[in-house]
Structure formats: C-alpha cells, structure tokens
Image (cartoon, rainbow, N blue to C red; front, top):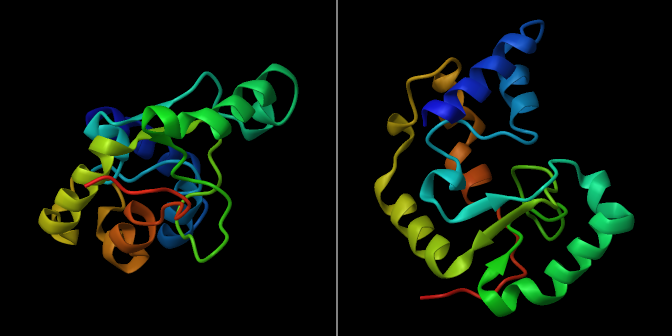
Amino acid sequence: FDEQKVIWERKWKTYNSLNPNERALKILTYSSMPTTSRHHWGTDIDLNSLSNSYFSSGKGQKEYDWLAKNAELYGFYQPYTEKDHGRTGYNLEMWHWSYLPLASKYLKYYNNNIKYSDIQGFKGDSLAQSIQMIDRYVNGLSKKVKTYN
C-alpha cells in the first residue's frame, strides 16, 4: 500500500492542472489506486520493461510471443490486454502477468470483502466509487483466460 501510495501521490501532484476526476483517470491509465492493485496480493509481476513498445519488436517481441504462447502452461496470464470484448480499466500492459491459480482466489476474496469505503488514505481516494474502481479496474480483466477454482 505504501509504495503504491507514493506512486499515486507523485502522479497526483504531477497532473495538478487537471480537475480531480480527470487527474485520477489519467493516473489510472497504467497505475492503480492504493488498495486496488493486484500487486498487493503477491500474485502479479511486472516484467523487465514498463513500455508496450519494448514488447513490440526485437528481443522484447520474442519474449512476449513466448509468454503469449506458453505462460498459461505455467498458470500465468496477461490480465490487461487490449480493451476489446467489453474489457474496462487499465490500458494494455504487455509487461504485467498474473499467477492465476492464486490470483483468481484472491480476486474472489477481494470482491467478497473489500468495499469502496475501504479504499482510502491517499489523495483522491474519495473518487474510488464514482470511478468504479472495483467494477471497472479491479474486475476489468482480460476474459481470454481459463479460471482456477
């Protein structure tokens, strides 16, 4: 939470020329509100580059192609693909991979136990419900994945 708060509040300050709602949405392009990041669960990792362009050519593309073909064999999947088929939330993150056997259980727990009133303690936290952080971002995942129970 503390690390995510530092990232969030640094960006909150950077985008201070925007109104609060626009500011939050700008940050949410690639960063989570504290309390909503899958990284908090210990099930999600960011790979060696936080840039989609890295994975679109050369060595990065070879890495991504291998992951797209093989990650599922090891229980991993990419939660933030292109926003098609109704996916909402964060933009495409080719670097972000999730260990689904645990993450699917933690997502279920999150949805059953975390409420909008729990998302607090940082600048802009009052926007969580109006932005629909849980519905659109925590649950705005790629549907092209098998689930684990």
